[in-house]
Length: 78
Image 1 (cartoon, rainbow, N blue to C red):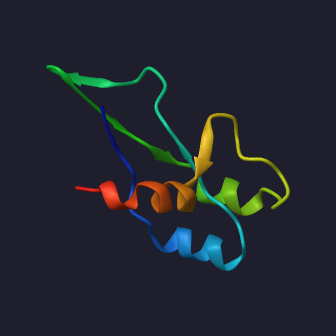
Image 2 (cartoon, rainbow, N blue to C red; image 1 turned 135 degrees about the vertical axis):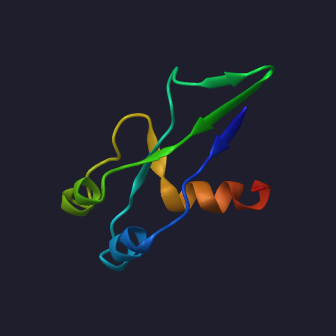
């Protein structure tokens, strides 16, 4: 299984400036089968939802922090 993570953009930089975290939502059952390989693309949380969510609030269910994923799996990118 290959999961593509969207590249950071200006919205991510603005959120980090304000100390906010942006969630990455991984597909649940929406997988694109190509023979024996499976490709999936993670989806970023809306910029406005991330900006307006209080810092002390937990991430949405099934979501992880964008920066944490990049730190853990940054070495495995193609």
